[in-house]
Image 1 (cartoon, rainbow, N blue to C red):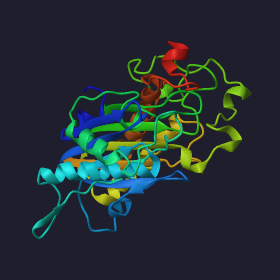
Image 2 (cartoon, rainbow, N blue to C red):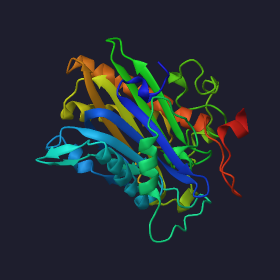
Image 3 (cartoon, rainbow, N blue to C red):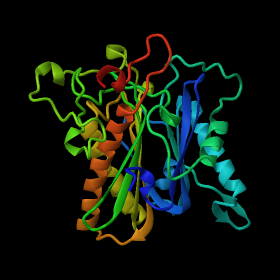
Length: 331
């Protein structure tokens, strides 16, 4: 166990980013098609192929998930991942044709100081292709890939990941790209809201403050009263080696959303586009009632930990006025 989403066998992650652009793409690639679903709670989401994940619809398996910066421009990232998978002969078979199924979602990072004057064609398709090509079991956290340009209300955001095993022996992992309108830390201090779920000091071991004051509970919002619905989002992918059908994967995504509420304050606002994808590789049977409930409970804890790790490992952007990282302020 490496405390990463890739602790689930058959799941690989790759990043591609551009420092001048201050944006990038993260690809979650599955070695074989997996059952998947999505749950959207934020008020301003940006997604691709989300309808295919509806339990009532036909497609049973997906090949990858694309997470990108660039707001709506970043939805092109899925096309780049799709192109690489097509070269490998992957995809949903329609007679002699094969179509790789790559849902995706994006964050808004267009105002973070990077050079977004890319001309006619945005770079996200090429970044998606490169990210898929780099997919591996080991990958970096922090200000990389889709999290390169991510921010929160008070600190630099990024990419985080964590994993755990249920009492029944089912593995679940999460990857988060945190660009939230709210805060991942309590007040103006170093404590993470997700502290009760921390494992082995993975995000500093600071615990929670000895007491909470009204100021700590006051809202800290990116942009303050001028915050816009299109400017913020936290994206999460939950993967498990459980054998789930699409309705069960949907329920897993819904329960896992609880992890966002444990780690971000506030969350699921009209100012966010929060999305959770759930993917199941189908290797271990799970009881459909108690077992799925336990899996969702652990998944929510893992999501909270991944969100905290994204901020703990992030580094500040090199632009005037850029938000500091947690390490800059508290290490």
